[in-house]
Image 1 (cartoon, rainbow, N blue to C red):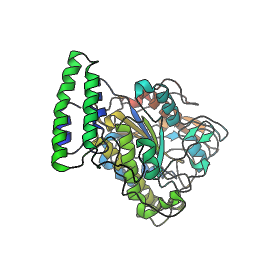
Image 2: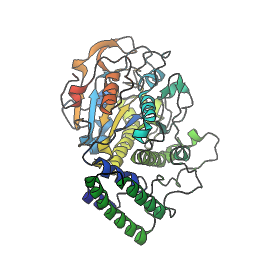
Image 3: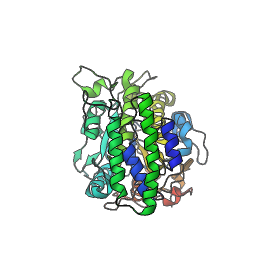
Image 4: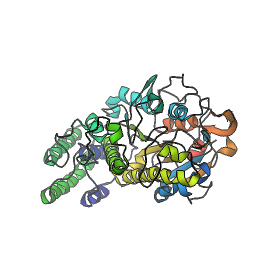
Length: 445
């Protein structure tokens, strides 16, 4: 982001509680012209899909009914048809165990990619600047206390996907419900901290960097004027979660998986995730929308999500479109958040996974997978495309005992690992990569 863009963002109110000032300005001055660290978000959505109603035709931008809510952000997407989960266990739980790990069976103990990324970031925290290795969170994770329905794994340990903003917030930002929250008069202190950061960094910079840093002081002046005239503004503490649903039920997951609170819970959880990435608290998040065999009844549906997946395509579509609408909203928020050299979406790579391919067939073939990033992302991913890898896949058993031509999903995950700059691990059971398609081709290799 250049100086003019930063000032424009401040004047327009684009810098909010989810956008860190001191981190943003310091990164811009020190890394102008350089590519910032890539962030990653792995989004899980439950119960598979009906592939012919989910995937657009290769080379076309018209989205069918199930994925139609993503039309508004199609320019940021890459649909990947023909992806499979190799190995046994063609079940919901088997898909959850495989989708981020590359495991072949339940007895395998490989860690999920979000955990492995977090461990490397933590080992290099003097460089990455993170304070939380990786974050596991979600929306509507009812029934998720069953380990077999979780997607994040640290070896043999399965990690919880917290769906309560009041639990996730203090893990990241240090405050709990009832303590100081954004918009509570801390803006002046945050500005002082930002100025102190800039002054400290200036002493270690060369002449050109000092001149760029000095330019950013104009932005601080604009922001100070905005606070003086309009009151609460932004801080690096994170978003305001005071509207988070509160229930006296003992099972918090169940309370926050009710239809009437899902929209609000999703909105708040997205804001927390964006703030954590924007502040540099973490580089990777596993975000679960529901869990395997999810019984959650989403807004607009007459059946729970799992039951709907075993009905006809139209019935399953009524539930799937809500999840897709939430992901579209998530992408748009990232797109609207300023960051170094562009938007936060430009510096973030999103990958969606599910536990099944066809929800009614319980197979692991044609997983509803797509990638997302900014049109001008710094990872070389060419977006705004629909690809079909089935003609290029090799026949393999993918859970249901039958052979299907497909690309193993770990080829995609390992390409993401490389694009994000991780070097301490590789994804297991991979057969190659998808770099040719990543860079604009129609085939994976």
